[in-house]
Length: 575
Image (cartoon, rainbow, N blue to C red):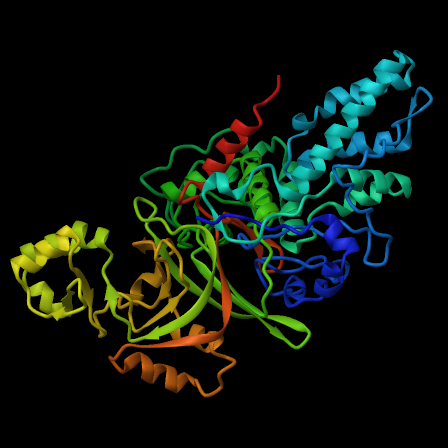
């Protein structure tokens, strides 16, 4: 598996031809699109000069440009190993901390506002040491030299974490196939900032300039500001039955209203009565919509569990989202497709003149959380197959198809199956010998094109070693479900004609009618794309969309839980 990654260094962004040639590439403008949930832009004016990359969610997903501005002097070239590195200017003037020292200490102390842990940088200890030094508690030269080194090391680590993330996506087995990374020299970056007298501006510019990052960070800090909100100081009373339905009485209505108001789903002025009704029910529906739940207004077990998640827990969820945004690869193409697994949504983006258009959004079905999860990866879509055959994977054949055929031989004809021998010959009759040959792996079984075909009538191919692709389905009723993890791992799409038109927009002869005809022909045909289209399978349980609202989705694959555990293992809490 090739899991090399390329993240342009800050030197790349500010001093090389790479930046000059890519700063207005199509995906730089993708981030400017205000309608995109993953790429919606609350910092449109300030981000126009940066190359930005593909999330969300939820929604999203890149690395920052650390330049002070496009016209400022570049960070010096990284010294080669053969050169003696230049010394970092002291953080002291005589025995007193400099203004830069106070700036650095404040940034490290505020690391939580970036979803980072101040303890990773010994922020409290450094702050106390510098306070002692400023009060003349210790002016020994070796003590000041040690503080110099410790503050420099802490700030370098902070900048590396902020820009590249604390972990590699390889830890979570995410398959981002990209060129090797360039090294960001945090020391050279800090040194140049200090030499130019612009450390505060440089550290502020180090924040990833991905609008989704800024939106999630803003929402995270709004939840942080709730602190120990009184709405979560006591539990909601037990429900009167298995669920609370509109029109029923409930002792917990005042506390319920307080929580919904704190989260912005209910007007603060709304005063609940003795019965669950009216504005309170509408507020509940808004809450359910924002939390990936059925918006029926019924307070059941799943909704109660979501209501019991404290603001502090949501802060941690959004901090994990920020970590993902830091190490998702940059994308360079005029069009792209993004699937956010926990949200069960596909979005397609295209360049329209000088603007990037959210050209398409649709619901999807993804792999079952229990046993057939859709992998997180980046691959290129290269072809479309109309009226496809379904070559049943051997694991599915042995686990599901062959046992069914042994129980119900009529299923073979009903579903349009046929066998294919090792030399490619087709056998269209069911025998025990054929079943045994598939069981041994000598033959394979496939489903002919037709109305019962598991892939529907179209397949979007993105070659990968896990045989994951996008396709339609003969069971479109599943798209009406709120939770949609039903597949064997591939991604079922709600609107295949619309996606095909997006993919084939450079081929005007492929009209919607022609696409439908090819899908209905019943004879398999493959059309190669002139230009591959990147497809990113992303995972974000927090997404900002709909004018700045934050949405939370269940961690169906436990990826957030795995990331949190990996971070704990990599960075044990220091006492």
